[in-house]
Image (cartoon, rainbow over all chains, first blue to last red; front, side):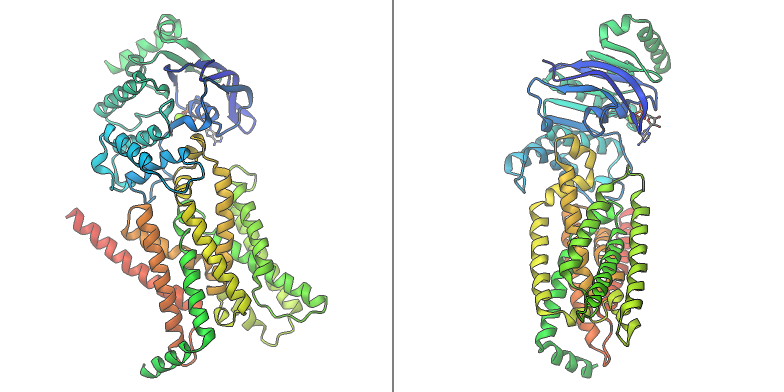
Length: 238
Length: 295
Ligand SMILES: Nc1ncnc2c1ncn2[C@@H]1O[C@H](COP(=O)(O)OP(=O)(O)O)[C@@H](O)[C@H]1O
Ligand SMILES: [Mg+2]
């Protein structure tokens, strides 16, 4: 059984569908890249998968022993947290919360996990810095470290490279690929096929209101829509 | 001045004044705990909204009591105000961002409505010779804290300790759902339940704070210490600790200062004035700090 499968899912707001008839499955170790223009409904789909919104129709099933508290999430950056007083360590550590249950405080293992994840993302030296005073790339790393504290099973990443410079973008993609190689399933939203294509195993391409493609990477490159998109993106980045 | 100090010393030897100082400090302590959360969830106004609800409830219940023949004063009776305030708080916080009536306009409706109805009831049913004095007392808590009945004092103490305990036990959860509710829900935290808990604690804090500073100044008591602490500190824990210290010190100072002049000053306004002064000092220090760092 797949970790996650969506069947004929429709997502939207207040009775108005944004995308309809989405079907895909994610097995353990898969790397699914969700492509689509701005406003095509990628974030909405991700929030629906995370059960932050209810689907308009269709269903989402999780299986393969995936529990609700074994999901990691990197939200698309919001400005709400702008003046929040929080140190990087506090933010990263809050990812461990879903393992706490009713226990009020973090135990040593969790603190160590947070420290390891900060180390892994190269933000250990920022741990007592204020989150809101970091650069965009450093903030993304802190949020990814937090997501890693929440789980190693499946990560949902909403435009993890938005606002990063080209170097930081490549580093971020490499990091995500590393995580995937070590067994974490990835669902990532991206505009950037050229760089994500190197690593993704599956593609979900969303167009206006409907799904343009859903399947494996190799099929996608052979398909019409895939070839057009690759040419377009390739042309742009060249 | 020395005359004032002598008077103060005399006051401090009295039982009810000691009680007032203890209760005042306890209330200031726990009302600052959630300041950061309220500021950051853009809920600063829930303080005034809920305190208006408490005000309305107080007057309406007092009127009902009077109609059925029981002679009661407009005192702030915690036993019926608290449940109504908790109910309103839960409704407001849980109505959330996607309800038909947006949170802030719902708040405005409830708070202004409660204020109007409360004042109306007071006017119609009050037998008091000094109506505006009574209104003032409820709105600004002029001497409320000094006139608390013994049972209210014990309830205040118990509730303050309870709020503090709950806050400490759920500190990490409160941080997580304040910082990023979506992330918390997505990763399996029962955010709804913790929001509910938050709504209840907030209501309790508001009702407590009303006893100290009166209905109109509740927001100040809740929000000022947090805003003050945020001038200088950058981590959630440091801000929380600092705002508690600021709140307690300001409340104690405010109560003491209010007893210095011969006629006394209204306790609530005095405390808030001290809060404002400390806020100004912290702002200046914060500003200078930033300047020094960018140099
Ligand atoms: N909270 C909301 N309420 C109503 N409509 C929304 C809301 N958020 C986004 N939308 C609409 O849903 C569509 C998809 O948005 P989104 O999923 O954020 O797109 P993407 O992430 O692909 O850029 C957009 O047309 C947007 O205007
Ligand atoms: Mg988006």
